[in-house]
Image (cartoon, rainbow, N blue to C red; front, side, top):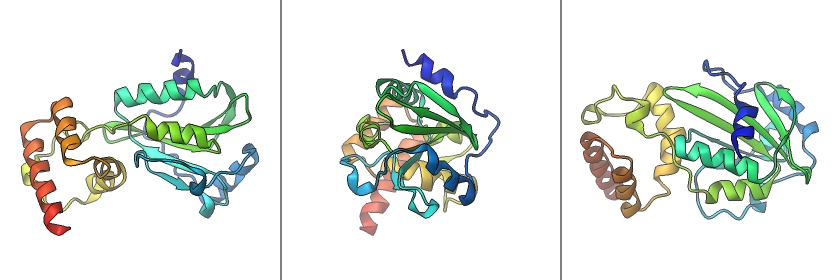
Length: 209
């Protein structure tokens, strides 16, 4: 069923085109939203994907940016389908603009980054964002995004990996307790080097608490 919604966003760039619009462009988005939404309106118990408000861009709506793995991407398309965002209003600044039968609006942007695909979702639908956070999404793991990296040699993370770690990995990893982290690494069949890295990473974080 969600193949329809996968097709809707399939026209977005697969060549690394960024959807980081300048402020003036985002201010032009306001005419597409029929309702307002703030973080205070959301009842969210899970912190991934991280949701932020868009007030600094002059928009009374919220945004989520994340790099989902394949199973999470499937759940995302299914969620878009369940919320009936089946009317495409057009495309602005690399975003597809979708609307559902109750008048809620969803901007869907997608661009390539490293070895994953980042989704940028901007919406006035509190129900959609709450269900998104309840869907237990997970990101593409670091050993897939950066297969050339030897975790045993990792020091301070800088550059592309540092940016990815801060924006896409930590918002997910910090929501998990120790048992959930071990389960995640086992389920995703993490290489031994990364398992050992995260053991040290957890111990270091505990020492810094």
